[in-house]
Image 1 (cartoon, rainbow, N blue to C red):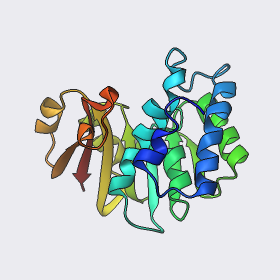
Image 2 (cartoon, rainbow, N blue to C red):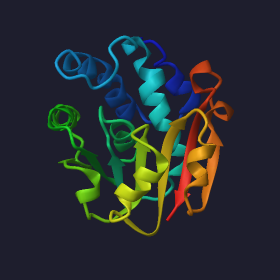
Image 3 (cartoon, rainbow, N blue to C red):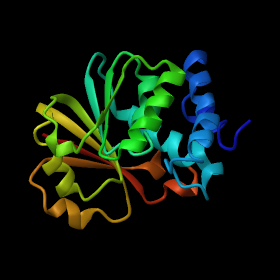
Length: 203
């Protein structure tokens, strides 16, 4: 059993067997790809399930709809988009990143797991005009920049879910949108989540 993998049963007991099998395969797939492309930090790879999978899946608490389009802005190593696309296989996921080698690596992951609901785009977010119901993002940039980059790609009444850490008050003062903050330490007991937050922004 991979380190922290058992926490999936603790926090997400409703994940069915086929989806859990795909999530189980991610460790070996990423470990192989990460030797050539730095998708995630190599020094903390043993914490793969805690730092990347479970952190990404925290957004499941805030995704209710089926048959919606979700854009993962600056997906990088495929987080949170890849784990969420496994869970929400009835939703369309568009993973966007400007670094070509990362998109190429993610394409290998998508093919390995036969993720039919994932589209990969190698482009800067501000140049995309595909309209989405929801934009998700993990630690890419400042909130004000994320709002600027995504303004052409979100529907009226759409929402943005950001995974952020640390003090976000100074960033939030600069935006005019309505927002809510959720502290992940209220969901998880592990120390890793003590300063981690989800910020829900309304368009």
